[in-house]
Amino acid sequence: MEKFVVTGGNKLFGEVSISGAKNAAVAIIPAVILCDEPCTIENIPNISDVALIGRILQSMGAEIKRIDKSTLYIDPTHITTYCATNEMVRGMRASYYLLGALLGKYKKAKVALPGGCDFGVRPIDQHLKGFALLGADHDLINGAIIDLDCHGKLTGNHIYLDVVSVGATMNIMLAAVKAEGQTVIENAAKEPHIVDLANFLNSMGANIKGAGTDVIKIRGVEYLHGVTYSIIPDQIEAGTYMCAAAATRGAITVNNVTPKHLDSITAKLREMGVEVTEYDESVKIDATKRPLSKCNIKTMPHPGFPTDCQPQFAALLTTVPGTSIINENVWDNRYQYINEFLRMGAQISVESKLAIIEGGKELTAAPVKATDLRAGVALIIAALCAKGTTEISNIQFIERGYEDIVEKFSALGANIKKVYFRDDTDAKMNA
Ligand code: EPZ
Image (cartoon, rainbow, N blue to C red; front, side, top):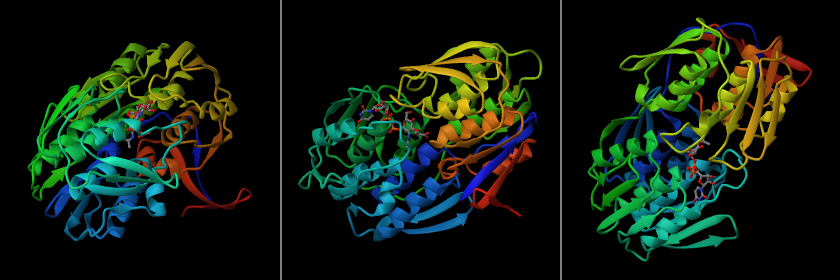
């Protein structure tokens, strides 16, 4: 068993470099299936979700070579199947992108239902509605495998999404790239990783217009050629370190970011009294100059405040005197982690979509569990601010999405270690 052991009290200072965006990488890697030649993808984050999607593609016949830590060469030309049904597929939510990519390429797809972080019900009805409008029927085999078939032909169509869904927007885009005629996705999601996927597909010869707006037009093409493409920086990883610096009342520079992608996070930090200075590819956060004030947050699809930074901001707000209210407006059940915060002495109550935080009470160390990826990293932030040494278990969730997290936090002055436990009483420190 592995845990993070974090001793609180150190303010974060220094510089951190942000890796490529997880939620772009987990779509762009399966998107290579659509390509008729090999591709080289740069700025890939070295995280377990990326390793897993790579292994899934390899199990289907793709050749994958790691050129360096952040560059993958992927040759999809030897993929011999439209099926991805093994256990690995269930290990991550984003394996649903295999549906769109395989359907686009082979006009058929058989993919195991995805797993991933548990925020209650995570439907994919909008993905399936989009595929159906392109001409693909679906069957659910034994409640566990989705079988899509368009009988040899995908045809472009108008698709109105009933909810703004990142996954449905990207998945429909993947299938529509090789559909006949024009597909229009209305009420599309606008996250930076949607623009990144569209840019990647366009660089291979696809014809996608409007990504980043709520109407995306895709004209199908027959052939996609190989490219070298660099993934955008991870907006949420950047927001996490910005938040951690503010929570510890430190001052850091966050490098390799696109400041525009961080607008909603920057705005909230400024509202609280944190000084944020933007440069071309970095932002500087300074929380040393004045006391921070409470604030309210409502999560929304982009360009609103990202749900994937909600738990980290909850950690920050526990350190700020006064009552702050979070309104989680994207997921039904993204407050499981609050129980772990309560064990550390935080004063938070949850009423439906709202978390009401009475901030400014001292946090104290406790054994806690990551309940999902962002919840886990929020516990690290809380632990950095707490009195004493906190042990965080279930860290496999955190390692799904954060590259070199111990090294990056340590370089900023945090006291954090990854520790291997034989059991709860016998700890062996990582040499
Ligand atoms: C993506 O999930 C991200 N995951 C999530 O990040 C992120 O929280 C979420 O977008 C919202 O930004 C990946 O990119 C791999 P959605 P996704 O479809 O695509 C409802 C992280 O921590 N909905 O935009 O699965 C759904 O229930 C992860 O990095 C339907 O009703 O999210 C939710 O309420 C966790 N029907 C809302 O839409 C559907 O068919 C948004 O979900 C699809 C979604």
